Image 1 (cartoon, rainbow, N blue to C red):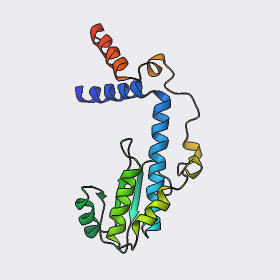
Image 2: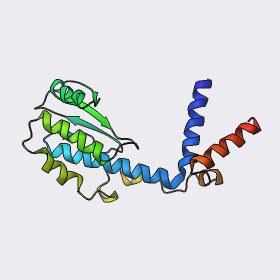
Image 3: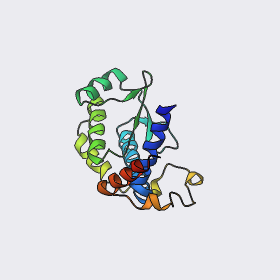
Image 4: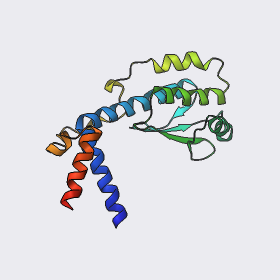
Length: 173
């Protein structure tokens, strides 16, 4: 189907534009932010249910209803994946940053009437999160080289990328 080819081309161009180093750095940042969020929510009294995760955490709450949380989240213009009356999931991506994590933690803190969320958030988000805190099993880490072709290591600016795409268009592939 043409729609599936479009997705494949988009994914390929994403890999060309970012290259192996930037993709790896993005993945590390995403996982670290998810770890910070998990730790903060745990300190607020929520339970993170995933033993292993990369970018998505599954949160359980026995004390705060999802309806209450939803009110605070919608007020902050956030949308979470509400699974049932006690669980929700949150996914982090490359567009997120520590400020987004702070905002999410603030929503959860407000929902459970935490007395001083700013101190907790500051403590959690200033923590040291490296690969040592990884919640990804080591056997799942890639050990082989990837994206080694020249095309994945050449076009990392918008101008270079647009010229490369134009060259491909001119070839009418």
